[in-house]
Amino acid sequence: MDLLNTVERVVRRTLEGKIDFVAQTQVEIITYVVLSIATVVAFLAGYIAADLRISLAIFGVAVLGLLVLFVPPWPYLNLHPVPWRAPVAPSLEFSKAE
Image (tube, rainbow, N blue to C red; front, side, top):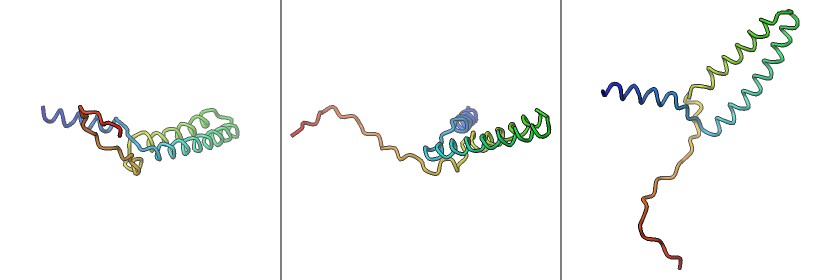
């Protein structure tokens, strides 16, 4: 059972995909730029070669490259973690404003 719990924790942590807010912004900008450039290059290459498969292949390679770079939670995507506050124990007494 201990092995199953360990495997479950590793799989859960891997698939959870936590990245920081700075990396989210950078990934979004890079994705827009790469997909825009890949679209133009794929269209021009397919137009010049008169072959739709070339267009789809170039765009597909760009999409797969972005998926490999950004979908797994790589360590470089969590260089600026959010500092969370420590939990505060609830108290039964209400503080009185003076």
